[in-house]
Image (cartoon, rainbow, N blue to C red):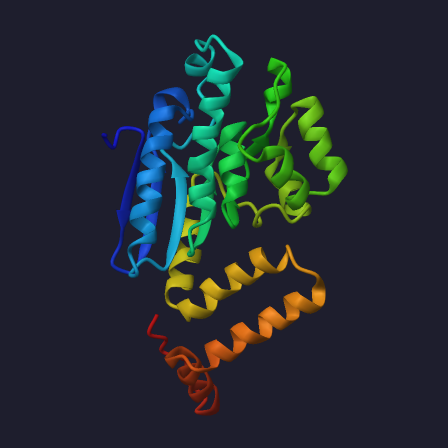
Length: 261
């Protein structure tokens, strides 16, 4: 396996940057990239020093233009196509399942599988020229990496349905208006803005941040009373952590906290 399809770098602050590295084809998502993302996700999960993750596309023109049509267009049966999308879907779910907060840094287009990968991230930091789309319907197909489900959870239902049935993209400004992404930054600045946010998370109380992500995910599947009970149990466990003791002491002593991570 090579690093030709995606690359992983971890800085001294604990920020992991996952870069999709097929800029010559707008970082289109193929089987080899899925293999690489699965390996990267496993490596990040095993590294306790990583406090936040940023996913970006190389080249500055596209985050990811979608599944590689040249690859799946050569498939000859529905079962082969099903195997293809299931494999790409496993890679998307591996990124979504990371315990750390994952931030998509989106320059240019995030279409099809690229939009689905961005939606699988926890936060989306975007440039003003970013575009999100699920254009599979224009091929007589539909998203297969979670797009029909995550879109309706991240956007108003009618907006999500319009994306799916027309294939027309969502602008960065509209995405911000719907709460889908952060306020757009200048073109070329999405990665720096995402890194700033990731570094802030790495400097924070990591156990509490990881727990917040888990509570949002797990609580959504529960009835409200059970979700609140889960929240309170997690709060009990956090109260015993060194970061909680430091946070309370810093507040009482009127100084910035020094979290240990």
